[in-house]
Length: 274
Image 1 (cartoon, one colour):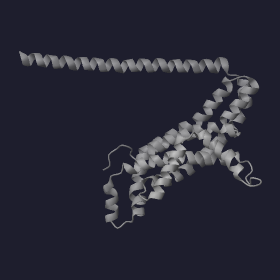
Image 2 (cartoon, rainbow, N blue to C red; image 1 turned 180 degrees about the vertical axis):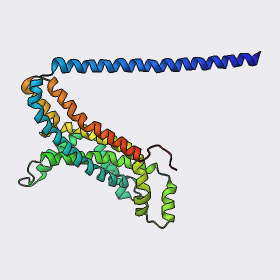
Image 3 (cartoon, helix red, strand yellow; image 1 turned 30 degrees about the vertical axis):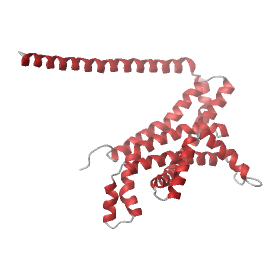
Image 4 (cartoon, rainbow, N blue to C red; image 1 turned 60 degrees about the horizontal axis):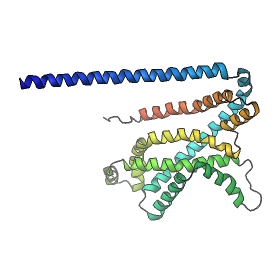
């Protein structure tokens, strides 16, 4: 009797668990469907009732120019920040005191102060240190690339440091036992594995880099937010330029997200190796 009662209780608990899981599943489907329909309805209302299609055609070329400018700044900042971030990551794992201390101080400063503050320092501060006429004309774009590179190199350096830390210590020992120097072991054995470990964080940082270009409006870079502000102040129509602003940013971040996902798949992220 006791065994029969215990078996019935176990069956009942399993059935209740299945019911709860099913309820949770369909509850999630219902909530997500309602949310999606609400968002689509709001977008449809905005496009139908708030967007001036005549103005849209007029300002579209300005947003295309701003989009291309942001894309150029992003590509330059992305390449330079990844390269610099690798060196920062090496510095963060270095056992040499000056190297490790400098890398730690660099990361602490650029992660501990706002990017907007760093942009202001580079754009206004560097020319003020120059004796006489500052030699670089149109300093806005170089200052923007430098600020974005220095800031994001700190975050990428930390991602690389974490990626290196996730590689088992025996990997370097095995490389050294094969006659590799420390530098060769890092380049040929450790860094490829660290890159794989850090790829998701680096990809996320690159998406943030795209969005951080919006801060460049404070130094008169004619990027997407600057064009939005100009159009809005001239026409008092917020929604028409808002639509183009959203499309412009998503036109960079969505493909970038697919590229990162592709690279993760190529790296067999989280998978088993044969």
